[in-house]
Amino acid sequence: MPILKTERLELRELCFADDAFILELLNEPGFLRHIGDKGVRSLSDARQYIAKGPMASYRRCGFGLYLVSLAGGGEPVGICGLLKRDTLPDVDVGFAFLSRHWSKGYAVESAAAVLDHGRRQLGLKRMVAITAPENHGSIAVLERIGLKFERMVRLAADPHDLKLFGIIFAE
Image 1 (cartoon, rainbow, N blue to C red):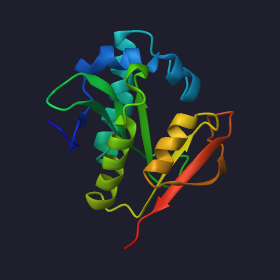
Image 2 (image 1 turned 90 degrees about the vertical axis):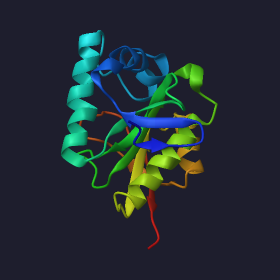
Image 3 (image 1 turned 60 degrees about the vertical axis):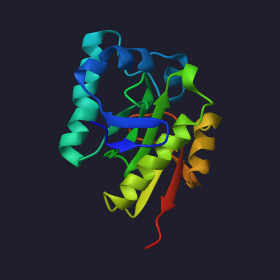
Image 4 (image 1 turned 180 degrees about the horizontal axis):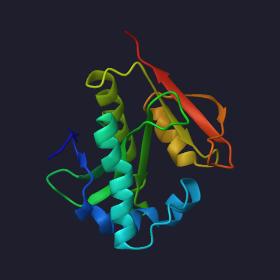
């Protein structure tokens, strides 16, 4: 059942049946380069990733990363959603898409819907996003949905500096 719908996309909670898609996505060169190696090498690893990441977040926070598919129950194209990291004070928007679906506007469309959901349904007053400084595609998406660069940050487990973008919603 979709959590969010846009003109072209549906976002729903990830489930174990999405294991093959997650295995493919998390091993794409762009994901490995810009987001990092999550150590997902098998369908079993993918199910563990889904259970310990998105599913745990749904239970703990009431939100998480969602599967993004083409409207009407179509093919999965990526993931997009909200994360609450222990290392950041604010909820952040995250997304990743299969490279064959880049440059079609899906990241902007789904991230804008997630941002609106966080503001309207979850009552968030501020949201952030982090990305590698060289990830120009993600930076463009964040700027298109209204986030502004604030500062460089380093998360505890990451040896690299990341760009932090943020937005404060007007009352």
